Image 1 (tube, one colour):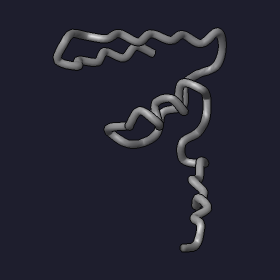
Image 2 (spheres, helix red, strand yellow):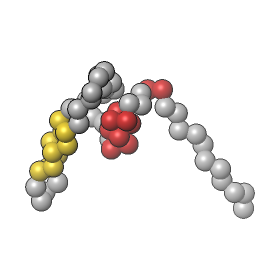
Image 3 (tube, helix red, strand yellow):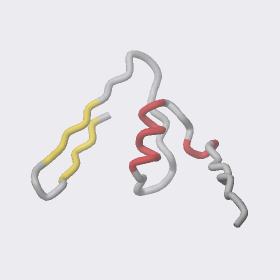
Length: 58
């Protein structure tokens, strides 16, 4: 996987190669940083659920 990113001060190239297997990419045109990190770690984004955080009563 090669990712080329521009941040106004220059380009950033991210390159990651698997020894075996394939990357699973979500079916959307654009993904955020959190989803990208999950893809690179091998986590399927569609199966991840964010739990409600505990909120202390006032």
